Length: 116
Image (cartoon, rainbow, N blue to C red; front, side):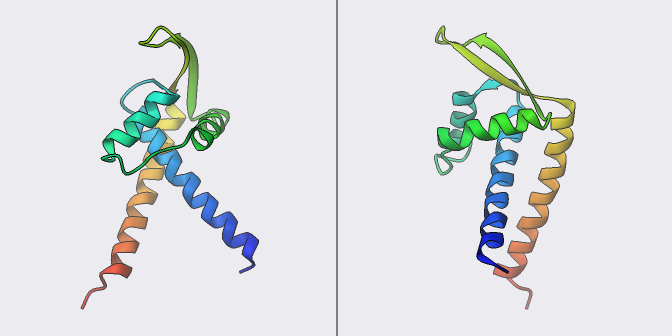
């Protein structure tokens, strides 16, 4: 496999993982970008930190795909912020991505801890 294809596959895996994290976080209700990043960090025990340069392009991409909707609101600290929420298509995508993730975890466990 040429190097550029390997790189593309790696980016898609990372993008898919970030998509799943965002969709899962928004399952609990609408949230602005900073709140999404905080929720992911808090729920992962500070192990996952999503940088702004990755988060906002992903949010915009998911919105273009019809999986998120957005609305401008005033945040808790009285600032104007764009709040994102799951669309019905986003909920279906979350279920699909979650299933793929479960398969991935199972495959990794098989490789890392093969049956005797």
